[in-house]
Amino acid sequence: MSDTWTTGRGAGEAGRGGSRRGGARQGEAQAPPGEAGIPGGAPSDVPGEDDEAHGAGPVRPLVAASWRRSARARVSQDGAARVELDENELAAYRDGHPLAAAMPVIRELMGAYATDGEHLLAVCDAAGRMMWVEGHAATLRKARTMNFVAGARWSEAAAGTNAPGTALAVDRPVQVVAAEHFRHPVRAWTCAAAPVHDPRSGRLLGAVDITGGSRLAHPHSLGFVQAVARAAESQLALLAPAAEPGRPCLSALGRDEALLTVGGRRIRLSRRHSEILVLLAHRPEGVGGEELLVLLYEDESVTPVTLRAELSRLRAVLGPDVLRSRPYRLAGPVDADFAAVDRRLASGAVAAAAGEYAGPLLPSSLAPGVVRLRDRLAGRLRAALVERNDPGLLADWAYSAWGEDDVIVWRALCGAVPASQRPPVLARLDSLEAELSTGATVLQRPGRHTRG
Image 1 (cartoon, rainbow, N blue to C red):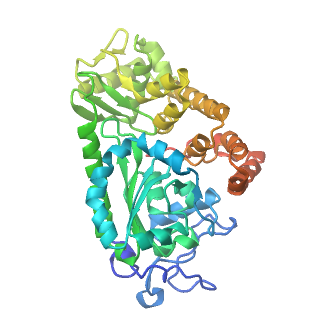
Image 2 (spheres, one colour):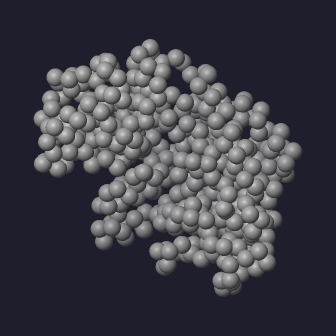
Image 3 (cartoon, helix red, strand yellow):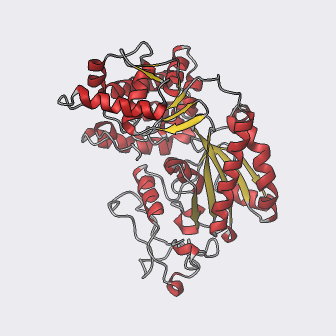
């Protein structure tokens, strides 16, 4: 591994690498490129026990990218995480969360390790809201000073660079060491986190995290928490009800490449095949070749021969019994995640719809038919959230990757949160309003939140 902290140049004692010094010294990390002039700047310290002695290099690319996102989200470097759920709200919320079923396994694997090592185990939801924070009593007391507690939001967009929040943002295991944290009060800590997904649909459910001092600044910590996340997913798979035999399941929300589960197989589709499956799942009665051509391709010069070749390749992937022609259609019903969200909205179950919405439908797709479906679903859900005016649901959207620049929701959130929680929301809204006045919001810059 090539990270500086894994080669002995940056796994320093917690707190010492995070001190603030006047001016930049040789070996210190600088603010990420392109962030000059942002309020508060970006962190200028590099994690390490002794920067000068060890000659610590530049900030890791993963951390630099996270700093840029944190700065763009106007996260205060000296702020604290916001506690959003009181004890009663928290108890009801986590009892109904899918990860509650995995907590016995998580505690069995991590509980003694956290307590004996003076660490904390934490589990958050997909929006970065802490549901469980447990472990060593003295460490718990210290963590409360920065609101690392159950009920607080630690998403990257709300709390800056931190392991659970950044792991959710990039959807992969992440370790953040000391001064790599965006906020100054968190730089006395080291943490490692890994995302946890629904074993059937692949939907992001949350993250499992280990947080503590300098002894966690080791690659083994990252491997350990990743293994715990996989064990949690295995436990959820054992407890999950069996899918209806032969009924395919399609997951396309928040994914550039859809995941199809059919006949006991899990198939990751190409981007074009993902678009075809989404359109056919939406139109179970079937779609004629000419219409499908229009729904799929922006370029009007694409010929039916191209489409037939693409469908032939898709049939080879899925098998002859799944895809039919004249008109093009799927052989039977498909359980699609975007259709489930649509049904929840139609029945008025806004909270359930928001909980199942894992992100925009095939976010990078430019296929006209997919774009219309994506915009329609997102628009309906946004309107329902604004009408419901629930600060928790609005915050889940606002602090997500797809909602961080959604000025409509930020306006609603500003009016919904209590006065004591309004200043950071108002600051973000003011920033968005200023960008809107110059025509520079993400709503006018399509493609920023797509993932490769």
